[in-house]
Length: 83
Image 1 (tube, rainbow, N blue to C red):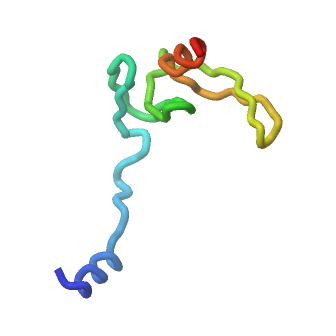
Image 2 (cartoon, helix red, strand yellow):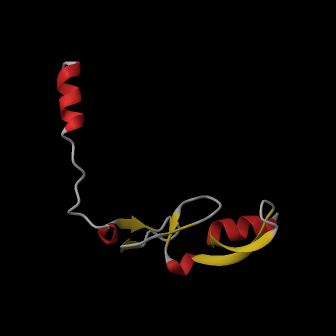
């Protein structure tokens, strides 16, 4: 493929706007439950988990000096509770 044709393809590229974010499938990394729509991610490991395996814990943010509610998965909650 020549550089000219690559530039032509990039110039004419249009995003696919037919899929909505709510149609995105996800799988919980703890129980392998499948879901559709908006997913929840752990603020420590950044993996997707179902609502049954996410809990919100308070965490101190040193930049703002405030406590924040952070979503944490069951694996990370147990791992950090043991330490």
